[in-house]
Length: 162
Image (tube, rainbow, N blue to C red; front, side, top):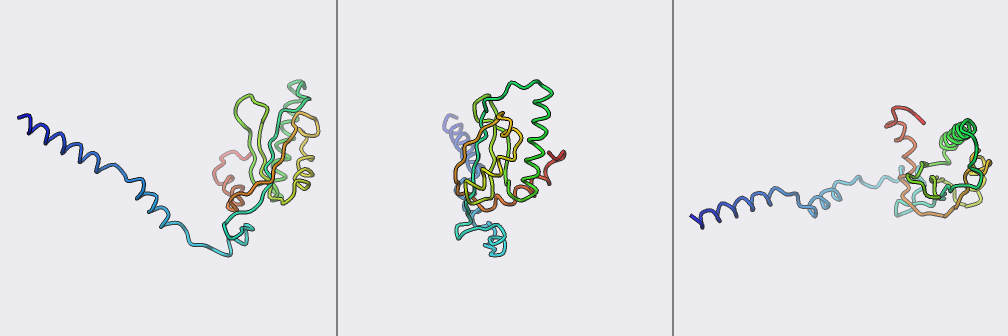
């Protein structure tokens, strides 16, 4: 009876394990099914041979002037968001968003520009930067050229546009 129970147990374990997906096989399958290189898409995005391109990554940090009353803060936030939308519609701002938590970094921008100077000029149009509510730190960054599709994709998934 004991041996019979062991055989049943091992058979159950073998069947259970056989149903588990093989992560290596899944990765291989996903790599094999990736889309083929499209030179027109790569050119549209400004991609190099690796499908990458330079951007400017901006960290928006807590600024020294944050003691506005609630009405002024709300107006400043609305103007900040309007500026973000303007930069995105102009094709300069690829990605933007707040950072969770209460740290000094409050949000990020990813600009489709090649120089820190150009990104600085664009960020200086932000009313929150102008008011000193936010400051910034900028870095040149090398990322996937496919980021250029995010603004279009964002609106497809946003029930309420920002």
